[in-house]
Length: 441
Image (cartoon, rainbow, N blue to C red; front, top):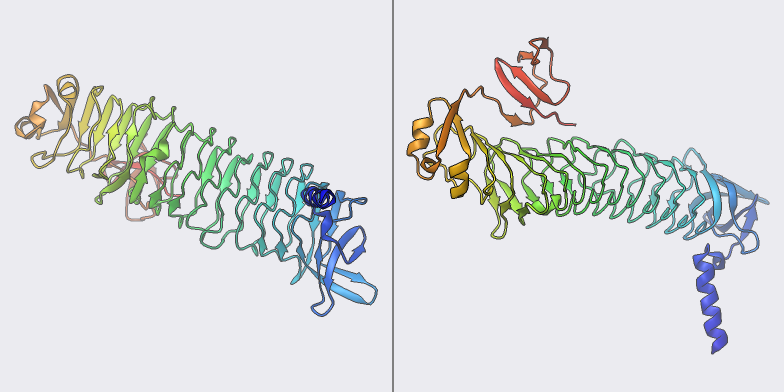
């Protein structure tokens, strides 16, 4: 009984250290394989315990042994796990070459600095390169259809990931790049939505470039990316999920008018966040959970460009000092608190607009309203309770994402110079009116 337990223990240890117990059928140039004569295919497998893989390894597209030549189609599960390989080059020759990298094939190969993936690669298993903490860069071939769960998680030195231009919908799996060293992320077209916690704990991530067809930020997708200070969303984004940016050091957060629903806890723990902009739009924005001042203690400015359709538990309790209300708003949410010093309303007729400001805000904040509408505010239910109402000249400035590629429009920058079209975010003059531009990626 004791011998049986010892044998099971040793087999488990050997499997963890590199899958040495898998066995092999042949060895060619220091690479070990299993093979199928009828199919003329071979699979790279783990090396024997006494001759482990290490240093630089080149895996050929085909391998010849005696009178047989095999197409090398796969790397087996745990084949290089916990080995001392430093560089792996996987070759392809036309349609011949590795198509599959097995689950945990390179997991815990902590000295692996460089890997070259073949043009034939179609899939890889979960945690294929998990905890390859020395891996610095990876180029994913266009043949690769998806990146599975935790494929590169724990690759803390992985600074650069080059994706194919297009991948399948949902191609980036849960925790695929969890705790990596990525600094700039350019996502491929076609994926539409990222995996849960796909880039969580990527502490060096400073910039994310989304494709124009990307529509969903998944749960915890960028949580704890502490170098991420600003994010620009594509104009087709529809969903921002729970904890999506929690504990990031964002300073400004703009919610495009395309977004249909968002969990307020997407911004949980964003202690550096100073400004939130909800772009002008006609459709209500559905919110879940509450935005609490304790979660965003630095928040001071808020632009409300459309109605908020909260669920029964959602609320806005933030100690902001400046609030701007867009012209499309028909009802104020609960509530922006007692710290308001300035409220700028773009609503010209407040008669049928529900307000929910506190008595303290009405007594201490200055309500600024468009020229010609002061009397309406002084008579409208709720609004007439403000102690200080002033007017301003409404120059038609709005905050919204728009398509600027229109040749009939006349554009000027704020220096008065005419330009073809805006090339960066900011304030411009379009056809004689000021417009705040938020360009899609």
